[in-house]
Amino acid sequence: MAVCARLCGVGPSRGCRRRGAQREQRREGPADSEPDTDAEEERIEGARLGPGEAPAPAPAARAPLSLLELPPELLVQIFGSLPGTDLPSLARVCSTFRRILRTDTIWRRRCREEYGVCENLRKLEITGVSCRDVYAKRINPRVKSGRFMKILPDYEHMEYRDVYTCLLHRYRHILGLWQPDIGPYGGLLNVVVDGLFIIGWMYLPPHDPHVDDPMRFKPLFRIHLMERKSATVECMYGHKGPHNGHIQIVKKDEFSTKCNQTDHHRMSGGRQEEFRTWLREEWGRTLEDIFHEHMQELILMKFIYTSQYDNCLTYRRIYLPPSSPADLLKPGLFKGTYGSHGLEIVMLSFHGKKAKGTKITGDPNIPAGQQTVEIDLAHPIQLPDIENLRNFNELSRIVLEVQEQVRREQQQEEEEEGQDEEEGRSRQGDSQQAEQPAQKDDAGAEGTEAAGTAAAPESAPTSQPFVLPVGVISRNEDYPRTCRMCFYGTGLIAGHGFTSPERTPGIFILFDDDRFGFIWLELKSFSLYSRIKISFQNAEAPSREAFDEMLKNIQSMTT
Image: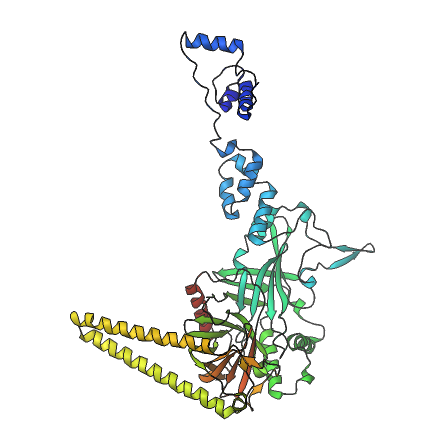
């Protein structure tokens, strides 16, 4: 009775539950409801108060003051809305919380909301394992007693808490975009949660020179739970199926993979069979189809070099470039043609009046991580008419004139900076105040010049005819025949082994929102770039500073 009275908010008198129910009836409004107390209770209450005293109104029922007073099903909803990283601390509060946190519904919600896991462990059919590619998640069949059986993880006895704690949370730091350290060649790895697996997908450009074709991808490793408390890492390299592997998180934004069974990478036909298979996958052709001797040497060199990294690789995190409404086009990843080196992946990013193209995959001349092109958005170029555009000398004259203009402007800026430093050291007091109007005028002049530069592309036609000059080599003749605008830029060229690198003039051509090109004047070569239309998860940079720092790091590794 005492507990009942405390919950109802009245003293230790009889009929407290009935009075609570009757108060609820009165709140609902029935006019003929029974009195709140019976005759016996009124007699006892009157004797306690004495003659002439009015009884005090009964206090209203109070709201629960503690989470422990809430129904368990409501606590499950509350706990399920908290981040999974906070739940272990919550379980240490009391045994009741710890018992409620064993509810698998909570962990299933955290797996879905934080990592996008939609599979149901209890309804996962043997043929219904969600996957983007059958090869990546296949489970090898075996014959037993004349029947085919699938070897699947023991999902029936697993819990979502195991999936969250032993798989998703443990390996959360490797999700996102990464660049493998494969010498000058680099690469693009995307680690994602795919169903009840974590899979590392290596993205490869389409076969040369089909730059508009979709990206190819293959799995390098996968992680999943074979038992309740143990995550299994498997290497997917080779043609003999998944085998034992290992992952080590070296430090922040860096991890490494190691294969413990490299014999699975070897083929029965030896290195020649491995080379032919690699060539067919990498280039979509045989060595007999490649008549260019220099190209054959480059292909063989890449096979020999990359084969050394089939048992151990280190990856470093990369971010997608941040975007701004003022950008010329949406930044991101593009695939571009690079002569005998084939197609390579380039990251286009914007930095004020400059745009930069950074190699994510590279070659022995310009390795991955280097800035392959730089576009000067402050110096647009007006192309000549279509007949004069076919003349390479005419286009070269226009570009070299802009180059000379840029050189004079840079020289003038350096001289002005030197003069300002000298004046700043020599002048004191009032002389410094006298400089302020001049600085404001300079700023105003710069603002006017910037406004004029920004207005120049807007005044250009929405599209104009385009054709490559005679003598300019292009791997892909199926390039757009109209363009929106052009800008002066420079391209990085170097000898084999990144020797004697130098920046040479060129012209950046914007075709549309997803394609652009670059003409290398000195090489008389044309590169066509097409956007990679894939939505990568966990790849956004936390800040502009973090992205700039990432660019410096990947460039310094190959310098």
